[in-house]
Amino acid sequence: MFLEATANGGPVPADLAEPVTPFRLAMRGTSQPKPRCIALDGTVGEWTGCMIHTDRPTPCREFGASYEDGVHNPSCDDARARHGLPALTLDDWDGVVR
Image (tube, rainbow, N blue to C red; front, side):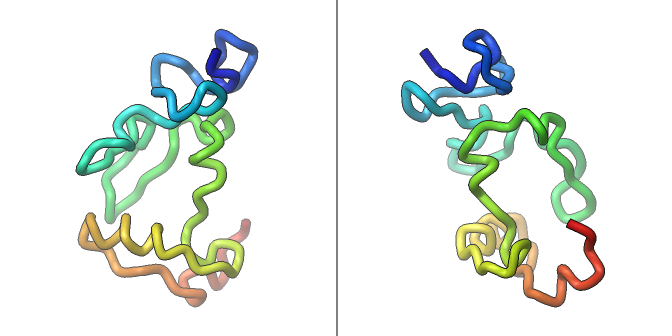
């Protein structure tokens, strides 16, 4: 079923995703012990971007960076720590156009 997949009229390229529920997908690679999204472009700690940002699945759209919208996300802090990066602060967003 996978309603988010392109085969069913959704935006998510099915070959880049894996099922979370019958209705939701996650990007391949994100469920691994050392997660690395298959659609992540760049080098963590230098520059990264999502190659399918506008077509990403629901779990990706729901996972915000800490303080991106003024809200702390401890899971973001944990993910950054796994890559040796410091947690984001409100100051990190000063001057960032969103």
